[in-house]
Length: 292
DNA sequence: TACCAGGAACGGG
DNA sequence: CCCGTTCATGGT
Image 1 (spheres, chains in turn green, purple, blue):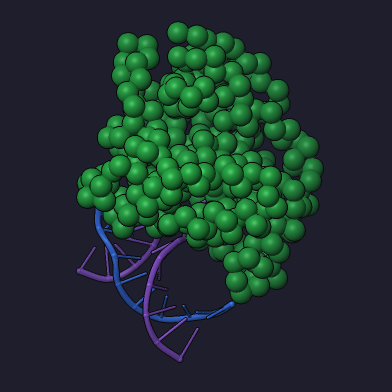
Image 2 (tube, rainbow, N blue to C red):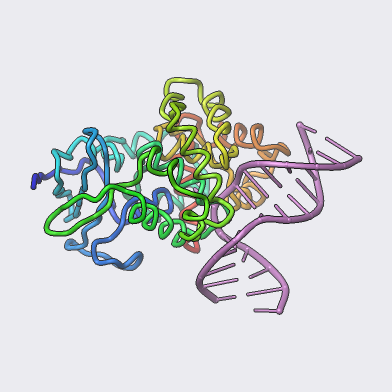
């Protein structure tokens, strides 16, 4: 087993980052989903950064982030958890406003994750009309039912399924995992990716064009496409318009409501400073969802 | 029991 | 393009 230590640069909160509803691909080693954590709480995820499936385990103690893995995982950990993001510089690009100031102040150290693109795509297809805890449960079951087993620290975990593994799943088998009407969406999208249309191919394209391209996948509308761009592909300007943000627009930014998704999202994006608007959106989302 | 959850596909106007 | 309806499922 390989292991290492990362000296954290700037505010970082592991629990906040992986449990704030951005990613459904991390789980707590003790099996608990939510609740207080301490310096012994460890989170796991899987990756294929080196081609072969690998398990990664992390633990935060103050300014230190410790990792253990079947591979040399430091680059993966840095990218997946947004450790190289300069939170202060990002915040300075967001125009001051009562709500954004309050949200940033209330949750110091929350970073934007970078989920593996296919896993991010599937998990946000699953997110439609579903609560955070259940989306998380679906991804756990997808791993355990279809993913490749990986031995790590005396236990067997399962990597997130590949496009081929999910494309080979029957709709009935996916429904047994309580995916509901999302089952055929996941299966059909997995088949598209397995056939060679990979979500990461939109990298480098202009943001709105990238979003439209992602909506070609089954079960992917503009909101889910925005989540994939923001939480997987590093488009930090992406502003997903979910039910919480729509309510925020109604109360705090009514002039940004342009009657349709694309124009409203663009107006709010510009209001939140453009380049890192997705960061501000994520703070606002989490702040409101936790009763702020 | 009725309502809701980080929506999307579909059909009709 | 815009709108209403339908779609599973489990928790409250």
